[in-house]
Length: 115
Image 1 (cartoon, helix red, strand yellow):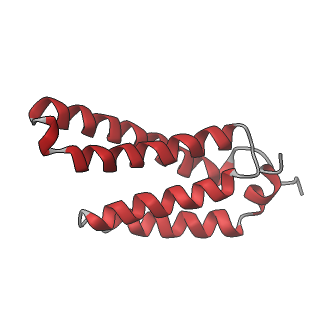
Image 2 (cartoon, rainbow, N blue to C red; image 1 turned 180 degrees about the vertical axis):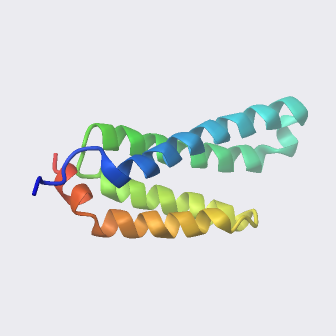
Image 3 (cartoon, rainbow, N blue to C red; image 1 turned 180 degrees about the horizontal axis):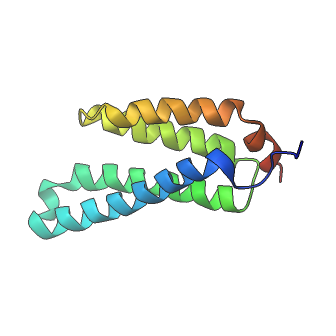
């Protein structure tokens, strides 16, 4: 049996999710800034910046295969799930819970992020 190592398998799905989170966050910020006065939406822009920053740092760590990638992924999923709860969207919390369990228990994650 081949060793599970490297970016592949099920790990592709949370990577796609992190990319989509960044993209949607950028779209949300651009919409907020074009439709409203900046002072009226400052809190939402700050939340969107958090939602963008954590997955972005996580992706950098993942593609560099850094040991910290696992921790960053879990923190990123907690932050995005927490922000989703704040705005009343419960569906991302389910996904975050599943992927946190994946990052905690996966042999591929354990074998990939060792640098």
